[in-house]
Each structure stands twice: as structure tokens, then as C-alpha cells.
Picture 1 (tube, rainbow, N blue to C red):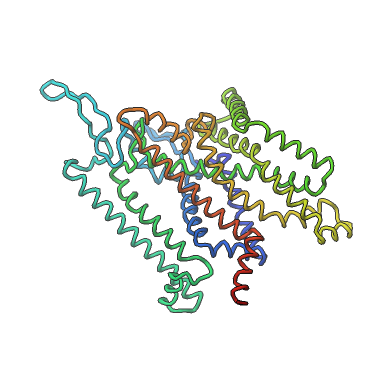
Picture 2 (picture 1 turned 30 degrees about the horizontal axis):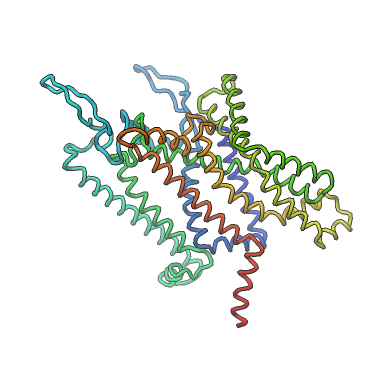
Length: 478
């Protein structure tokens, strides 16, 4: 039975808004020109390709459902389970179901800790037991492990190369038909970067992703690629599940703060007087409170309300989702002040320009001037702030979960993984793979978001855009 959580609904609303914004931009050449400059950026398009892979995983994990109960003793069961799963869970069912007893190292065939076993002669000894799923297909792991891992790696690389060549051929053929050129000429133009859109960066980033994902997918069929945690869960599965939490924190938090920041910033800058003083007092007071303390107090109050009203939620997943949504709203309320201050300063400058004064002279109302003349001219600041805040919010969730005031403990996230790995680092021998896996995925996500935000900033910032236009003109004059 399909089920829509609150965060799922907001994600679908965000996708619908993005599609609507895309149609709005296509019909306006001055907006489309800025996005064309984003498309010319090789770093921006490579990072967008990586972000698209993360977004695809996050969307698969946002399609939730409750599975039908299994039949028991030949009797047909009616109803649905209280457990909420996602489409990603269905795709990763072998990883999800292949739990071990406890820790196992990446690509291992035996547990990471010794256990006492009884021998056929009645004596006892301490050995590393075989895993139930990792390398279970090997009859003699000591002899066959290296050959099997190498064979699976080569097979994954072969599939990755084949998939990459197929996708590249489709792109080149479509471009050749569109440009009316030959296949070889089109490929040469794309490879040398002689295209307006940075197709070479997209194809290169996609090739790197496929070369990394191919062997991992091939090895995941027989091993725990990133090992298992304390309760035997596959770390690769946990890492992929953490992506949705990071995306939800980064996007919904940003959307929740936008109405406050945009409305109050523009009104403060345009109206001035006591309204400006009140809004400045509001965000100055909010900034004077340590954000960590404010977030911790808010999260604890929400947690108490959720714990004292269990009848509000039908499943544990809905309760965890409510806490995740509350964390997004709390982070949004405490992080809108920076954008509000920027918009107030920009509005103070815009209200003195001739076209705004002309609108005032024609008797336009303040709300119409702010909506028709101020808001469109500050949207580049809004867009740049939204993209740049994304990575900061992902890191904020990791820090808050690390100190215990972040998402619900049952919600898988990079922060909860790092918090759990902190305790594992103190044991002997050290369990390092959970921390490395969470850190690597979060680093790639944040780095891609930062590079894409740099490309957006360069394309939408009028000062940078004017320098890019002036430079070729000066070269031509020289």
C-alpha cells in the first residue's frame, strides 16, 4: 500500500516547483541566458551530474509503501505490515536482508571478532567464524577469495565501460542529428569542449561514476563491500539510505526559511522606518542566541511532544519522519537571518533606482512595486544563497546528530553513522569502515554542491557576468 510521509510530500512539491520554474525560465531569454552560463561551466556540469546521481537515489528512497503481510500456515493474510519500506529498499533487498551477526571488514568472508566454537572431539577453540552472506558462495575462501574478487571487479568494469559507451553513443548521435554534422565531427567537438553546453564534463563525470559503481554493484552481489556494523547491517546499504536524509535536510530546510527571509528582507529594505527597525531587532535578537542551544531546546521540546502523543502516528516511520521535518523547520527558522540581511541591503539600493521611483510617481502600490520590481531583481541573491546553504545544512545535520540532538535514532543519516562509528573507534581492533564510508559519501555530496553553487554564483552574479562579457571585448579591441 503506497504511503506518503510529510517529507515525501514536500519533496514531490519541490519537484513540481522545479518543473514549473523550468517552464518559466524557458520562456524568458534573460533568465535562460544565466542558466546557459551555468551550462558552460565544466566544474558546474560535472558536479551537477554527481548531484543528479545522489538525487536519483534520494527519490527512490522517497517512494514509500507498506508491504502486504505474508501468508501463515497456508492461510491467506489480510492487511499490511506496519513497517514502511521504500523503492530503494526493494532494489537493495539483498543488502538489507543479508545481515550478519556483528562486525565484518570490507569484502571479508569471516567475522571481525573471534568466537569460541566446540570442535568434534569436544574441545573448544577461538576462531573467526564464516559470514552467513559475505563470501558464502566460496568453498575455500583462503584460495578462491582473490580470484573471485578480481573476476567480479573486472566484470563490473566491463559492464561500466559498456554502459558508458552506449550512453555516449546515444548523446553523440542525438547531437549529430540536432547539429546536422557527421558522427566523428560531433564527437570531436564534444571531446574538445567546442560546445556551448559542457557535454565533455558531463560524460567524464558519468564515466567516473560508472567505473566506481560497476565494480561495487558486482561485488555487492557476493560480499559486504563496505563491511557490516555492530548489529551486522551492511554499511553500503546504510550509506545509500543516508543520502535521502541529507537531501531532505538540505532542501526542505532551505525552502522553509525562504518565505521569512525574502518577505522580511524586502519589506525592511523598501518600507524603512519602524518596520525596518522591528525586523532588524527581530533577526539581531535571534542571532544573539547561540544557534546550537536554540536548536537543542527546540528539538527537545518537539521530542517531548512526540513522545507524549504516540497516538498521532500510526507507524514508527511516521514518527521518525515527523522529527526529521521538525528538525528541518527548526534549522530553517534559525538560519534565515543571513539571507534576510542580504536582501534588505540589496532592496535599500534598488529602491533608489530610477525605475522604482518612476513606479512610485505613477502611483503603484508598495506591494506591487515590491512584487513586480524588487523581487525579480533580488532573485539571483536568493538562488545563490539557497544553493550555497545546501552543503552547510548537510554538515549541520551531521554535527547535530553527532551530539545527539539531530534526527531520530531510527533514521539512517550520515550523522547517526558517524556518531555510531565514534564508539567503534575506541574498540580493539579498530572498526574504521563505517566512519570512512559515511565521510566519503558526505564529502562527495558537499563538494559537488559547493562546486555547483560556485557555478551558479558566477553565472548569476552581475559583477562576475559583466567581467566575463568585458574580457572578450577587450581582447577583440586589442
